[in-house]
Image (cartoon, rainbow, N blue to C red):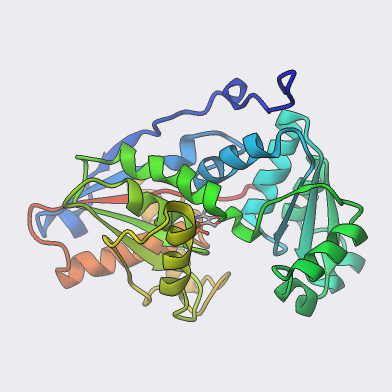
Length: 304
Ligand SMILES: Cc1ncc(COP(=O)(O)O)c(C=O)c1O
């Protein structure tokens, strides 16, 4: 699936773009006079789901047929999506996985899927993983993984190309919403989305990691992608449920209830935290009567 000049032809993957917008009736919003829309980025592509398409597509084109090397934890959605892209486009992929100890254990279903899609896994200890952004550490990792010359995509896929790719998400929502809300990991999707929105619209991010570092990270991503900041966004740091990967029984019950009400499969690590946060905000009266709120459905549950 590559053209003669080795640039992968992503159109052959037939992404569903713009992704659909679906209105849902939920009394927790309607009784406040607020409309809730779901931006179904989870329907863009069955394997490159949600923000994965928007971030990976420009990087796959830039890789121009070179192997892709990227990073992630043991359950990383980004690693799975990169592996799937490699399979679909005939590109070799290498995944650097956080946690040397995992090398000696049976692969979990997420990593097993990566391998089934042709990704070569390279496990590293957590201290090395933390330093992977340093040029010498990266060079020695690439050497050890036998992947010199590979095109490197950072953890979570959030480089400047990816952030610019996410601008289209905001552009697709111009005129549709007052507030566009999404869950944040690295903040790359929010950084791009906010740049694509129209006047009077604002983006609201719900970080799923604990730590309060994301505001600076998002500003940095916007500076690198657009040469300056885009101001119409904010974060609400209250809905991480203890940090990345933490899913409490309360959150799980909330997500199951949302699935029952609206027939939407709710991904637990990101999307559930977003929807929980939006319901809490609606109940606090944070959105004025007459407001339209869009929840971006950035992923889907992994079936294993
Ligand atoms: C389903 C889902 N939603 C949201 C995000 C957060 O995206 P970002 O890292 O751009 O903030 C991710 C992370 O990759 C994700 O897998």
